[in-house]
Amino acid sequence: MKIELTWPETADEPVLAAVHRVLHAVVELGGAIGYLAPPTRDETDPWVEAALAAAAKGEGRLALATVDGTVEAMGIWRRGREAVFRHSGEIGKVMAHPRARGLGLGRLVVSGLADDARAAGIETLTLHVRGNNHGAIALYESLGFREWGRLPNVVEVGEWRFDEVSMYLELGRGPGVILHGSSPGGPGSSPRPATP
Image (cartoon, rainbow, N blue to C red; front, side, top):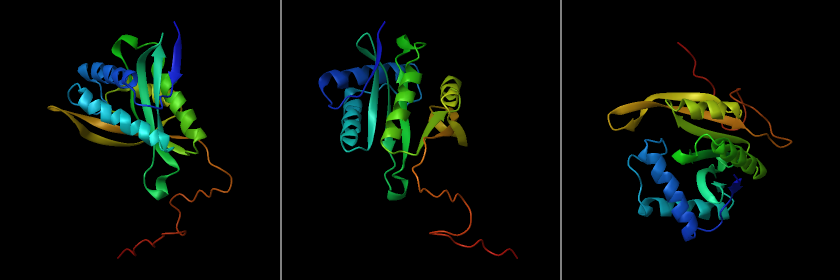
């Protein structure tokens, strides 16, 4: 069995069809990837095209994991859009086709995305995962992600409500970066109001 990670650059028919096949199969089984019903090509093709257009501008990358030449898993990272968040990125749409689970494809995709984002100068990666997706949370934790927040019962799937778990991974910072955190002072600072 040959497993590879690929980075498509053009939204040609084989890429569009392969991504749709994985997305459709995952959502059909209730996968938590942003669709309530299995998406059509009219929904997935524009998403792939936008992801690859962003990649061409250095704004992120789409990773596809293949097993013996067939796309069986995927994920994406995107750079923060606002000027003050350009050094951060978000991972999304990490999934493996149901028939390819257990092959380590999720680990391959997420590790590849983190390495690629680091090479692009990203300092911190974030992601969001449905609270009941314990396998994915364990995978992310094993790769160094840590939980930074949880919104209870905000993910809606029909009558069901699930927590949204937010996680982050620090990829490293360049020399000269000043970590100020929440300390008083610095650009944009305001004093704490006096208490009565």
